[in-house]
Every structure is written in C-alpha cells, then in structure tokens.
Length: 422
Image 1 (tube, rainbow, N blue to C red):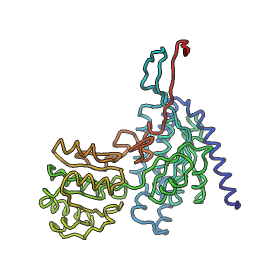
Image 2: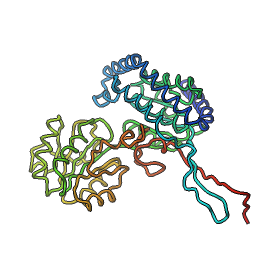
Image 3: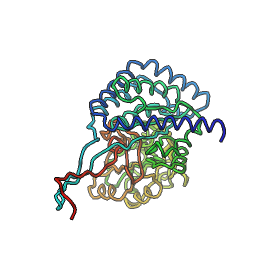
Image 4: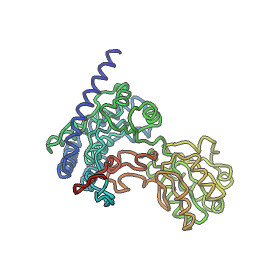
C-alpha cells in the first residue's frame, strides 16, 4: 500500500466513523429540529451568496482552462438565480411531510397482534457526483430531512463551490443543535477516494452516483454497497396519429430546448407516419429556430431535408442541441423502439386517443411515462418532492426521481397485548 493509499483509507475511515456516529442522533431528530436546520441553511446561503459566486467563478475559470465542454460548464455554473433556487429547495424540503416514523398498512392479525410498517432512515448515504454544485445542497437537504447522514464527494471541477456550500450547511446544523458531521464533504480531489468510498461498506449504507455514464458505470461495477442509479437519459416523445399537432410541437420543442444538458431532455422524437407529412415541417422549423441540429431517418428526409440519422443516433444521449427523428408505422412500433433503444428514464406520448394513451403508459417500461406532457417534468421539484437526490431506472428499491421517501426504508412493527404464540 502506497503512502497516498494509506492517507485515503485513513480519510475514509475518519469520515465514515464520523458519519456513522452522526447518523445515530439523526434517526431520532424531530421534524422541528430538521426543519429548523434546513431553513437556517437557506438563510445562510442567501446571506453568503457573494462568497458562493466568488468560489464558483474560480471553478468556472479553472473549467475553461481545462477545456470543459459547454454542457459541463452549464451544469457547473452558479448565479444568483440558481442560488435562490437552491434556497427555495431547502425551504420546500422543510415544508414537506417527514416520512420518518410514519406507520403504514397497520392491520390486526387473527392472533390479536397489530402489524404495520414504519418508515426509518437508511443510515449513511454516500453521494458521488460531477459538476453540479447544487447537488451538494439538494442531497444534503433530502438526507437530513429523511434522518440520514451523508458523505458528499463532488467532482474536482466544483471543489471550491462545494467547500463553501458544505460549510454553510454544517454551520446550520451546529446552530440547530444537530450533529455537524451529518453532512461531510470529501475535501480532497484524489480520484482514488472514489474507490475507497465504494468499498466503505462498514460505514456507508447506499451509494448514489450523479454524473456521466463513465462515473455511473464505475460505481455500479465496483461498489460493494447497494447503488441507486441511472446510466443514460435517452428520452422519447412519440407523436401519435391522433395527436394535437400544435401541442405536439410545443411539447417536443420544450422537451429538447428548455434545457438540453440534463437527463430528462428529449433525445429522439418518434412520429406516426399518418401525421409525418403535415407535422414534420412545422416541428423541424421550430426546432431549427432554436438552434437544434436535426438528424432524421429516410422517411423524415422525404418530408424535410435534414442530416441522415445513423444507427448509433437512436441510442445516443446527446445532452446538446441535437435531436434524432424517426417516423414509425404504429404505436406498437414506437413502443418497440423505446424499449429497444431507450434507457428506461422518461418517455411521453402526445395523443388525443384515450386507448392509445393507456396502451403507451402500460407498455413502455420506463421509470416515468407521460401522456401529453414534456419529459422535462421528470424532476423532483415538479413531482412535488421538493428536490431530488437522483433518478433511479432500477426496479429496487426506488424508481424514478428519488426524494424523501426513497431515502428511507421500512421495518416491521408489532403491537401486542400480551399475546403469546401457541
């Protein structure tokens, strides 16, 4: 073992032990205490916004020097609007019902005992993420409200922003009488620490990666701890034969251009052949007016001259102003395309036909399936979660945007009156 490896193991042991110790009192923290900490954190972020922006400008400068791409730089950037969004996220999480301690499915058994399931914190959450410093705040807020401790490992490109944000959060914990080690930042950019976190099964109960495919694949392949994840956001909008075409155009343009560098942005537009001739010219013109590069199948090019789509386009998450379009013969063909090339993230149908909408929702195997709505709604805020810690395309133990309830587990609780088993 090298000296650096020893230092990293020592650091992870220290952070893990502190997080595990902090998780114990967090389990019994009251909703009032947790909400007070979140509201105080929001106040501190507003007060310290100049320092946050200064730290972020340092990260942005280094990012430009490193040649980070446009999408990465957009995710990295903080301004007053995004800081205010983070503070509002803290306030929204504080206003949400606390899931911890709630008992569901309480039933009386023939033996006389009452049996139910109680929501309880998972324990210690490990977050490994890239670029977006807002994840530092969103993740901490959800972990704290759900009674967990969290170890945050952001990317090196956002280290200065994350240091300031984590310090604000820890200050709020101390001032609220909670353990400051319930939020800890890995204040070291050594990439080897990622591997150390993935092996820290003595301390960390679940790992959540947020970032590019290479990061998520590494976490999924190397982790000795349960993982909540999604790999890609290859999202589709299918325009049905019975679609309101003006609505369909608005949805497609919004899903692609409202913000293109995010996982719920539209990547492939599917159009029923019955409406292709009338719909494609208007939607392609609207997309190109927004700066979108359109790549189309042969049938798309028969209606509008665009760049020819290649086979790999159907399985590509662009995270940029690029969109592939395919004309399909039926709803069933659209579903087959989505289930073949999609990433089980978010897919939407535009249709005025009730039977078609119901069939699409039933047959598309994704974590979020929509009807007459933009894929951009697949988001914790829009789903009323206050903020999300990530999106899960797995089937266990959560699926879709992961909010407070997704950061808890359940235990059986039994209430008796002296019953004994015969």
